Length: 437
Ligand SMILES: Nc1nc2c(ncn2[C@@H]2O[C@H](COP(=O)(O)OP(=O)(O)OP(=O)(O)O)[C@@H](O)[C@H]2O)c(=O)[nH]1
Ligand SMILES: [Zn+2]
Image (tube, rainbow, N blue to C red):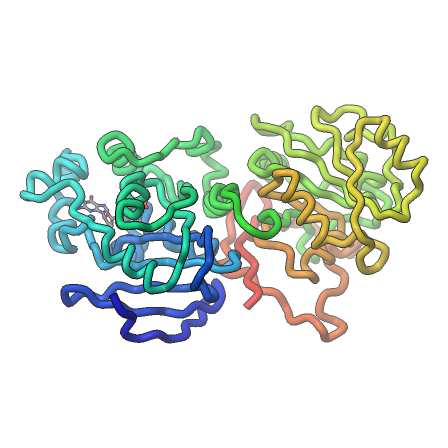
């Protein structure tokens, strides 16, 4: 199979190259991030066309969300491939799929509907996908799918599949029946994570939960970073840096704890430990406590702070080689794990090295809660993947969440792409991925 046209496609998720192939008069597409020729372990999604889901955002299936999450994931990956195969309706075409939908509205499931229209439950073939991957020169792949048949067939066609990356996203009431049929009748590996459906009033944050589930797959680079904080309407996170100030309302606090339960680790700066003495655990929601991480270049963390006295998981304290060895020993005796990294800018620890080391410790998803210095530094170095900002109806004129990012002129304003807004109690939650393109 030969590529007929190749062109550059800049997107909100990063720049890709689009390759067009043709087989039996049908165009199939490969959207490729970076050069994948000769690469191993390349993240690959083999996506079957679903006009209703991909273009119109139909909630009858999970295709549209899977497509969007894949693009976001590939945008963050060093390289990757999205194959867009024109196999509408699991190979039976759009018209028949729409007829099948009507049969499903009369009580048949997705498999029965295909059969009653005289078709197989699934008429797709992945030979063309294998040929496209071979033409692109990919040596081995990690396949983004819940469908074990795709893994088996690509393997039979000579593609080495090193691993499967699950993509359980976009689950809701409208497609619950369809997903159940896929799991029960088509052997899809769907766990119906006990987290979904969760607290009904927190269902709005599902786009982030989907990203986190993808981020758990082993990948190159550091963990997926979610930045969360609460600010007043004028952008303050506290009256001043010394005094703790509870800004969030109870529902927003539940959201924070819910998010903590969905991340491997929770990171704060030592100033937050000194001013708030927080517990950094999950209390307003039922779920696992994240691993606390404290950035503390000079080891000012008091050995009797709450996170050391009370936490079920003792914190990882990140410091530099210059910090006092006696303090290090005292914190170690109190239970902390000390992680030594290079010094970074402005007396902070080097964040890039910190993230690499946390990733080596198995931390794939990291929630960053502040304070202001940490928020600013993570943003400045483009280390944040996703933001969840709680805006409370208060005017404080105090300590700004982000004091200086663009003022020096070196940094362009950052965009929260596809920013969504949700009203939770009396607060507004603004959330979305950060785009750096
Ligand atoms: N015939 C038929 N096709 C459907 C129906 N719902 C979705 N599809 C098509 O199914 C294809 C997607 O297949 P899915 O079974 O959702 O997922 P998959 O591609 O097998 O597996 P994943 O890689 O995990 O997404 C797309 O081509 C959709 O158009 C349906 O009820 N009937
Ligand atoms: Zn679909």
